[in-house]
Image 1 (cartoon, helix red, strand yellow):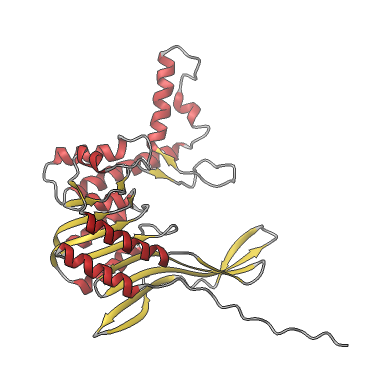
Image 2 (tube, rainbow, N blue to C red):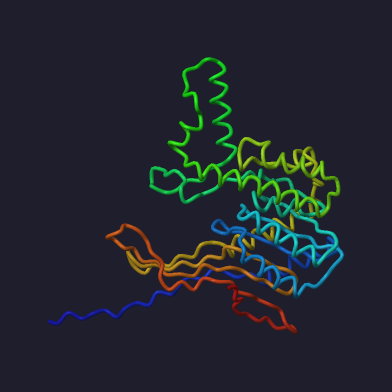
Length: 342
């Protein structure tokens, strides 16, 4: 009796949901409640503030036009501080007053965007963070997995300060702290981190200058965000934000409730959709970054095949179709397409 070969079963690739109708309804409610247009920016777990965000925001703002006040919803774990300056500059070209809406986390580079706004409305679970710079350099130290680790100037300064305190107390430590430190951290890494720290301070001053004329006050806020806190992720709550000089205010409860609903929709869109074909082949789809305003939504979707290369014991990507997608309402009809960002 011949063995019959079973037909191959085609596995349908999972796709993340795109909740354009729901998010547009919430943005419409927010705009009506606040009395001005709302622009939403959301990052998923693997999203970040990046240079292509600027082009995506430009596409959204070109449809939105110019307004007296724009309200910016921010939910992000951070990214590039230099991009933050570009984003605020672009937003400022479309409004005279910028108001940041922060219902949840607004960390690192997202905090930089927030301080570029005239006002920051913070909800009960909202927080900003420090913006002190850490750098992953080509000459950075290696961890136990043989990966390069990030080095923070604040951490290096604390090591040197502790070293000198121990010397002053007569403890047996090497006389030249830097010479001993160079065995673990390359001198060029220390120089690069110091340069990045100077850049971070400059970016904060430039962002605050959009709405703070007092240079001394701007310098004080920039210094606090870059050097006051013991951790990069230290949560700066509303009272602390006011204490360091930011124009932070308590967000109205109904506005916060709508933003939490909007975040829930984006979180559903941002869930990772993985399709396993077999033990060594899979496909992943995930929405990482979202920009949206009334009538238009632009999002970055990771869309790629994965193959497990057993001889190297690692997964590699194939057929990478990741990129920006756009959804627009034109004349009562919804149009979908790609947004090509070089």
